[in-house]
Length: 612
Image (cartoon, rainbow, N blue to C red; front, top):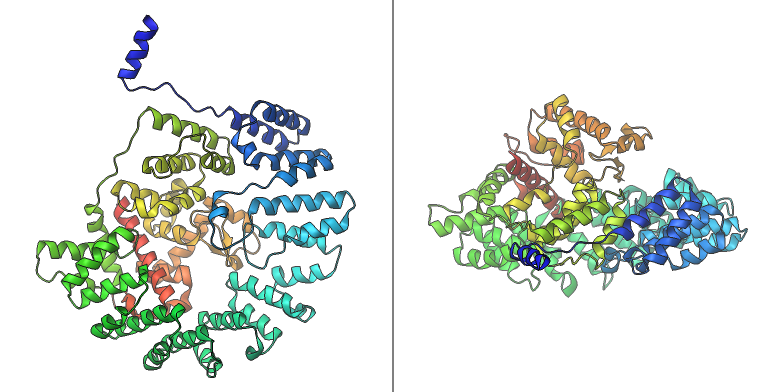
């Protein structure tokens, strides 16, 4: 009777007697740790007990655990057993299942590398070569690059051509290009294109053949590289005589004229594009030119012909309606836009105009005439005040779920926590905002900042609707290290965080496009000491020192400081700044670059508004 009374009391208090069992994750991790300590027999014992006692464990069912079991057999010298488990170890994370562009699954890539090593140990060189050749990439992926380097070093002992490939890809020694066949050179051009080494791509494609004899898709790559190098005159010359069907090259011819500020010829080329795949983009670029020239009615007439309604087109329409002071069209498009794109950088501006229209204030359109930096800081603060707070649930269920995931995170392996999140073991609702918050918190509390930031990317559209969730989108990770660097160099925290947000997305092991670590230190400044600069404290101090020099050079002008740090002095000099260091965003010709600058400015504004 007493137990029944206690049960009734617990239910009346809303306390539920459930918990999540994570014993299988803990036991599996013990086996992994034993392997890391080179205690292979202990590791094998733990794995055998794990498989016997937890046959339905998600790490096992998903094949994730089988990779580690195979690796332990390999370390023990039990090569056949290792190969058996590696053959079953094809774990596919959710992001690879959903990805639109097919790229190598890191887990499969890593599995193939170790399989190649095993066949090499077994003396089966042909089989080993088959596996190592799978690791040679036609595209750039910093996560896969270390294994490709290892594979090439092994393959060069089998065939000297792989030594040459290594020299070209990783030492950029192009004197070997003549040793490659045409199809190999084309693959190399893809690799360097993804690495954003546009001059190298041009050099390789010239080795393949003259421009007129390149395959059409490589002509497109060639021209795209020239446009990114601001070689507009060369693009115009190369596209002077186009064959029927070369529509994308015709479009890029228009872009080259536009970037050269020859707007009449740009418009002429865009107007001649009839192909349905590019017509809307051509209409957008044409309307954008007229908008820059302050011919807003022409811009309106052209953009309204568009059959495609993406974010860029809808945003340009709103900008035009503001300039034309067209209340009806603005309100109609704004109501749709705010539901579809709450994360758009200009959402705050559109909200303020809408709010002023509702209040019937004098000249509600005035704010749109100000430059980007002034506008962003002003509208973001106003926009934050318009948002409601998300009502957090901190009940027993939420607490138990958070504790379970955090305990898995405390095991120190972000991969294992990601596996847990993907499993069905924790009753996670993919549509629940509360569960999304719990997932992100488990990554943050475990110190997995890069992974937490990547998770938030998937939830941005939703989180932008709530004031108290914005700190997840604009986080202050590495607080202690940032505060230390800030005190040394006397810089605004928002400036440092904006650089980290843009350069590395809070990945302390970031190394891409010639920049390293949290603040993207240029590789030439650290002379091969990349691993030293993966340390957050070292990287932040070095980055803040560079940032301080630029900040003082521009007398504390934030926008100029950010652009020079992120893009370099050469790019900064191409922009037309006002006397106060602000910028009219519409004066930037390149559409992609304009968006990037908008995002950087609004990132700084959100950091300043949320935390100050």
